[in-house]
Every structure is written in structure tokens, then in C-alpha cells.
Length: 170
Image (cartoon, rainbow, N blue to C red):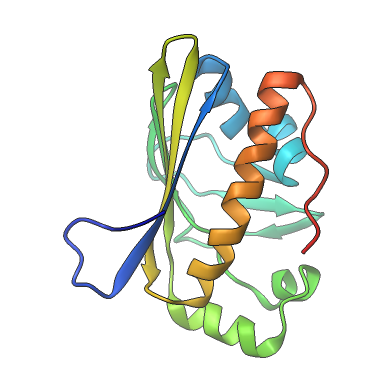
């Protein structure tokens, strides 16, 4: 599902994904922020205190990615979480199998952000993920369009069954 980020000049697109998870807002918040849980369904742990403006260090497979522009933007426990997307580094690209040409395009596209909105929905929670400030038709947009559905499905499985999904082959 594709939508425009409000107020943009037509040069950036957003990826929007909504699902319903049988859990509580607090449990979903924990799953989005606690390293022991994020590692299970994502393979990533965030080193941060989750205060607005705080830096976020991404720890993925023993590699850390830190940058002054990787920060928490919004942190309202059980309601909303937003942060700037990670910095693309040559080490990250090599580790995840991204070639030099694709890596160069990713770097040229600039920084994006992700926002999770958590809303109670009866005995479930409505989770909406918006990944925006993406170049329309860009490389990052294509990658997150494939990545988020698999990632959120694994998160949903973990919260509802106690087991994350196996890693989706790329």
C-alpha cells in the first residue's frame, strides 16, 4: 500500500503497512524496543534509551552502525515510536549481500524514517508502520516494500504464538 507523506513536494513516497496483533499496547511496545525481543524477530538490537533526540546504535549480526543522525524522533510508550533509519555503510552492505552499485544508490537517496503507531482495537492492537522520506521509485523504497511485511509478520507471530517466523530467504 503506497501513500504520500503529507506536505511533501511529490519527490518522496511512503511505505505504509497495517496489521492487527492479538496483544496489548505495552507488550507491542516492548517487542519494538527491547533488544532481546527485536533480535528474535528482526536480528537487530537497538542501543538507546528511547528518549527523543537520543542516538540509536544498530547492532546487527555483531556489526554496529552508529551515526549522529540516527536518532529517536518520537517515543510515547504504548502509543507511538519513530526514529531515523540506519546509516548505510560499506560493512553493512557487504554483510547483507548488497553490491557496490546498489549500495551507491542507497547512499545517494538519503536518510528516511520509520514510525510505528500503536492503537488498541478490542482485544487486539492495530499496528501501522509508516516508512517515509523515501525517494519515489527508489532503491530503499523497493527494499523496505519487501522487508517490512516479512518483519512485521514475524513480530506478529512472536507476540501471538511465542515463536518468531524463520528468516525469509532473500
